Amino acid sequence: MRQLVWIFRWMNVLVILATFLSYLAPWVNPEKTDFFTFFGTGYSWLLVLNILFVLFWAMLKKWNFLLSLLTILVGWAHFSSFIGFNFSNSSNQVETVKIMSYNTDGLRSLVKRNKGAQERIRSQFFNWLGSEENPDILCTQESGWTDLIKNNTELKYKVRNQGVTLFSKYPFLNQGSINFKNTRGNAAIWADVEIKQTILRIYSVHFLSNKITKETEELIENADLQQKQTWRGLRSIIGKYQRSASIRVQQAQEVLQHIQESPYPVVLCGDFNETPVSYLYKTLNENLKDNFKEAGGGIGTTFNGDIPGLKLDYILTSKELKIAQHKILKDVDYSDHYPIFSIIELK
Image (cartoon, rainbow, N blue to C red):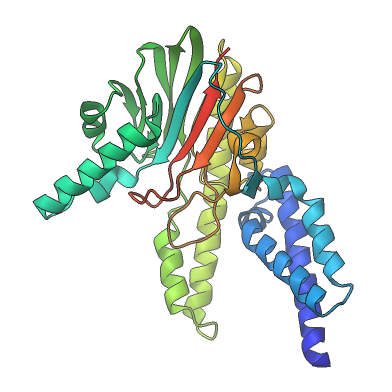
């Protein structure tokens, strides 16, 4: 028993060290060094391990639980990006706008070989979209079959570029796009929309994907630490992630520069392909606020694929806007991402 406790004590130390390395990730630009980036991505898993160590040492009535507890508290700002404690509701006395962001994975689940199944799933999807949250603005990434949405909902106005789409019930006063350099399938689009006498500039963005999901799933399924192939696969995954992180920072800086020139309050929606413990998130969150932190509740993960614990999708807003409600719709299963939904109060 004593030897087992000694092993767990050193495992706890390693987890704490890795957690503090993750805390540095938002402060270090991956264009300069990508060492901390991978630790930041793993923060949610490190958080779970720290919580387990707190419980483990508390059960043994040993003071060691304080080490992981203090580690969690030091990173409370990151903790609150993943775990929300807000369960607020919209006031009926003010005008609001309902905004949804959704990486739809091309709406592949709506296109089936069996015609009967295809029609049934499409009907379910549009019933959900039109009668459940019924957004006034819908921002999608990896958009496919966009005419289906336009023709089957009240979202009659659309702007699209590079698989990124912005739908609206209200006409656009102005619109445009930001084409990122050296990448395909990623872009940012924007539109100025007048909603109940308030003009907002809405952005839908999709920053560069890591393209490691399939490779990671195969590695997890076939992992053998005694095989060189496993270690080569792991190095390949880390390398791809770190290279794409640098490009995403460049893309985010282009979007931020555009946002800073906006004459109107801003709503930024999209799939950032980064967790809140990242330099990219910190860069944007310094200028805008995260609706999940403002009004969200529960666990904030938004990725619905085989890699657990990832929050990649966001709605960020200008700091003068009030967020009445924010939800991650985890009962919706049409993509490998969950849709996220905010109600924003209008002045």
